Length: 182
Image 1 (cartoon, rainbow, N blue to C red):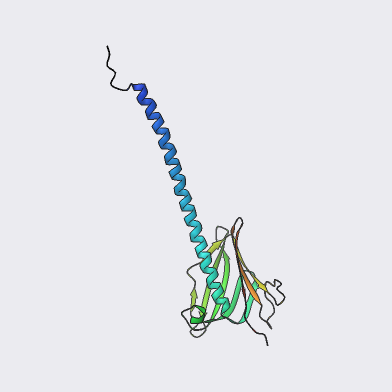
Image 2 (cartoon, rainbow, N blue to C red):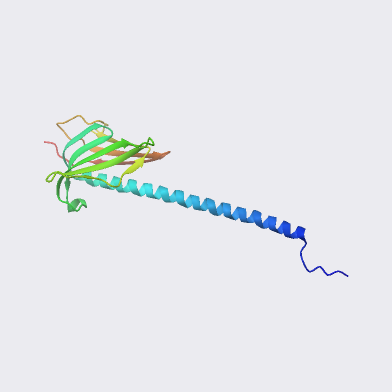
C-alpha cells in the first residue's frame, strides 16, 4: 500500500503555468489602468489650462477699452481696463496682446503679453496653452467674421477664441464687446 501525500512534479508545473497566466493577465489589466489614468490626467491638465486661458481672455475682453488691432487671425492687441470689478487684482489700463506661435512639434501655442500703460513693463503669461490650432475671429456689427480686423474707425462687436485640441475637441469662446460707438 502506497501513501501519496504530495503533489507530483507534473501537477506542480501545471499549477505554476496556470498561476503565471493569471498573473500576466492581472498585471496587463493593471498596466492598462495605469496608462488610462495617466492619459486622463494629461487630458485634465490640458483642459484646465485651456479653461484658465479662456477665462483670462474673457476678463481681458470684458475690460476692453479701445484700439482693437488684429493684423491676422493669430494676433490680437487691444487696451483693457483692469480692476477688482473684473475679478483682477490690478487697477488701471493695460495693453494686452495675444499671440499664437508655432512650436517645433508643429502645434500652436497661445501666449499672452500685458504691458502696464503707466510703467511700460511687459509681463508674459507663464501659463501657455498648446493645441493643434488656435486662432481668433473678430465679428462686425452684423455678426460676420472679419479677420483680420481692418476697421480702425469702429470697434468689432465680438471676438471669438478658437482652440482645437485635435480630433473633435474644439473650444470656442465668443465674447461680445460692450462698447458704444459715437
